Image: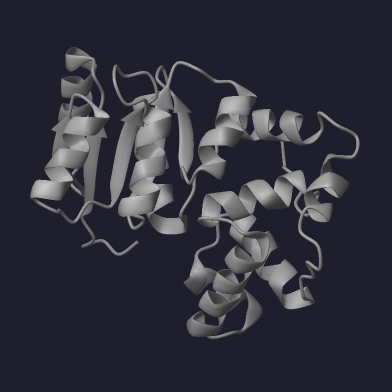
Length: 227
């Protein structure tokens, strides 16, 4: 991330005090800019519809009256796929984590996380497209190991799936939080070639974004989580 980059962030949470406090935190970081804050999913989507904004990241609460954070995440992926979603919730459940990421979320954080971790998550999601802390990684790993045949089941659901050696190398580096430029340097490729491999991977495994690729790699046994 270049020093001059400003990350524009939206906060969607129905708890006024929490939303206002989070907005103040965002405003205190020089490279962050609060684009908007909303008390709910419907309000946020109406804001975007009326006045489309250049929002990079949306920090979304899971539990909200009306439209849930999970549903808002799905709607954002459908209508504004350039916006990366960080789910912020009290529910650290492996099923919900996998469900949110499969639906396109780029990160899944506990509401009681440290402010430094939230800042790290925003920076990392902006840079690499995903951020999973140890808690989320552990939940994903447990979910992947829940059935002995999990990896075989995942791969069998994608008949004809074959990944080239280069695609596996790119996927491994994506899982290690390398961005396209860093992958290109590591593998002595052009950034454009790396982007082509990333697009091919997304198409082959039918994932929405980088976070989905990482989830696939872990569940399919193609990447071992370094815990």
